[in-house]
Length: 301
Length: 293
Ligand SMILES: [Zn+2]
Image (cartoon, rainbow over all chains, first blue to last red; front, side, top):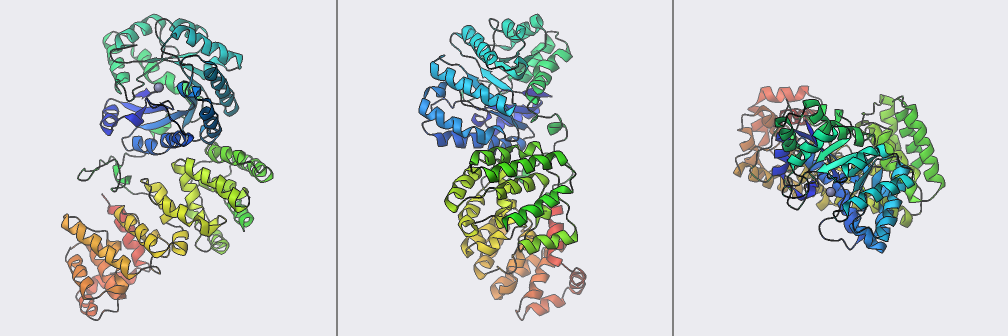
């Protein structure tokens, strides 16, 4: 059983969902982020947030995967201040919803003043609704941006245990762990962290508070990065209980602090039933036979 | 009326022994009704899931009657605790029409699946009923059966308010999704010749694709049986599927079409079985749902 605690499945196909389930992924977290191109209207954010708690969650369930999400205004789009203000007004409608396990991805991109302002506002929001925070650390000037994210979070009085600092590398991991934060690692094919580097990090730092994810999205990325990394860890002699911590349990412990994520959600899930889907405009196309696990298809109404 | 329904729903929730949830609910409804800021409603509405579970309500016979007296056709016995709490929150928000719609539209537009379920199932007890018709019609475009069911099943709103074309579309979609038609309120009263023709076309499409039709579909045809429909019913009779045959016989028995009598005479045993079932359409519908897939 694996959890991929950072994946943007709105950009993925049902083939990916099938492969993920087959590879043992039982639950995923989809952080609200940007879509590759800036949005220009607040309504685009509204519909995107609604998709995360609505259709995408339903779609994942049809493939036997429990879908959670985080809600937030990403740092890139925080730079359009008038729009960002409107998004901030929208967020209270979503952060309290079922299955919203954190405020995120928030943090810095270019580390501008606007980014700083909205990052801080959202840290306050997280405190108000008692949710963990998922921090996106910048690609450029990463080390400085990562440290600043933690400094500001502490300035606002957040407990490091409630904060997951994501997209770490060899340069940032030590300080993030030393200061008591959860450290997320994104396995990107070709770039950033490869599975091999991940193995070395777990060997060096141990499995405590380290979380592996795919951050798979519309770009070059691999939705199977978590199970593949687990396999490589196995081959490299990392003990099974350590693998479980970094590819399952730590994510559950960290995001479970929201009270919105419970192992029972997938251990006791209703049998997979694709017939609940409608034939009209469903994920199944004409001629495909729905897959049914379990004895029957009685829909209690 | 809003307060009466709300009090009744709270009374139903009290059976759940969830004092923490009920205390929270009381505090929230006070906040919502005393401060006319939508933000209070928004936050409470979504966070209700932290205090109430999706446990089905249990109503006594007396409570069932009370529900129907409060609002004809109101069936909270199909509701769960979470959606009931959400309905209470919604009912505690009071405003003049324009403000009310601005707020409630926002709730509809940002709802997740279970919030949609709560909102749509609550339609019959909300204020400004007639202005909510477009919202209900739009809601039926969903791809999620849980949401579709909240509008179409066990809900008096569509039968009471939908124009015929929208009513017919809803029933066709319910057939398409194989939803239990016997749970559609007013199904019998709102049958019409157009709908019967739609049902017939649908049956032909399914047969052309080598598939069966759900037996409940023949209920829509019953009052309009004529020579044309008769040939379809005969075809269904030949299916050798007992549920299908029983449905056809029920339709024939209800129809005033002369030659139907002869057909009925050919299946005395099945007809006798139908007589034993007080609610034959319901039992056909239930049985069909259990054999599905
Ligand atoms: Zn991301």
